[in-house]
Image (cartoon, rainbow, N blue to C red; front, side, top):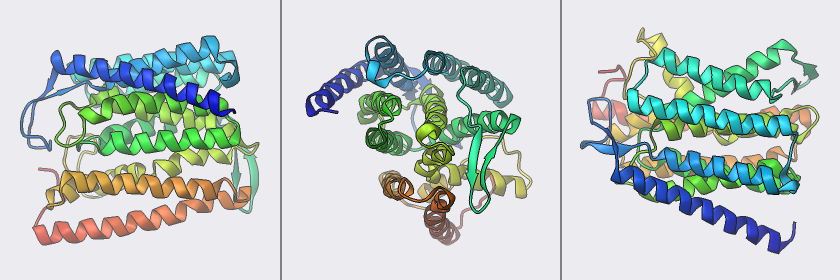
Length: 352
């Protein structure tokens, strides 16, 4: 790619960021208010739904990409599937912000949106297992892809509870994945992540502590869903589809916190779908760490994972899954640090 073309792409991304920012401003002027309660970190009613800017900027960018960007095309069926899936999850999540659906309703709606992506052919159907080789997944591939999309959607949604944490983390993830797509000649991934990152860049200044607006479910569910779908598309980086692990690697801190919290709450006999404030990041903030510090720690995790992703791309296929070990160690150290602070502060891990 020439420097001139790259600068044109950045200019287009800047326009989309401006579109996103203008829509976020509109959501502040005509707000859907998020009222504080015992499980939320904010103390005064704050607008939510800022993710509308991210969603609209992404869909607009993808429509332009589909019409004019021959360099970034993939099969029409998959391309249209990504756009339709984006519209589906965006509408569902916005309605959730407005009406606060029950968790089972959210889950069903997310599953239907995921089926749109699967129906377009976005499925991980083979994986390389260390010391075993590449295996064909068959029906398990479709079921596993469905589980991954829904799980990632909810993981990002659950982690969106502190100003700037998810927005800043995912801006780094999108920039990193766009750079990897550029390196690998995966032009659709490059363009889609550039567009998604532009939407986040337009929103993030309004969400930095103290936030003027939250992204809401329309932002967090949408971002989790789209990154999950792009993770499936990234599997095409190699024949064995090991590169499916790229997005889980980049999102590892968010996925670990969610997975650990769900398992811990189930172990303690709590209803895992019930609202609470006992995620690791929430306990860190409740123990006295400033919101900015907790957000910055997660941005640091994202940068660390991005550096590991560069190593991941150069490893032999049967060694690539082992790249998960360094971020796992980092998260265990973070868990130990937070647990120590929680103990010293006399906090309970049980939901209030």
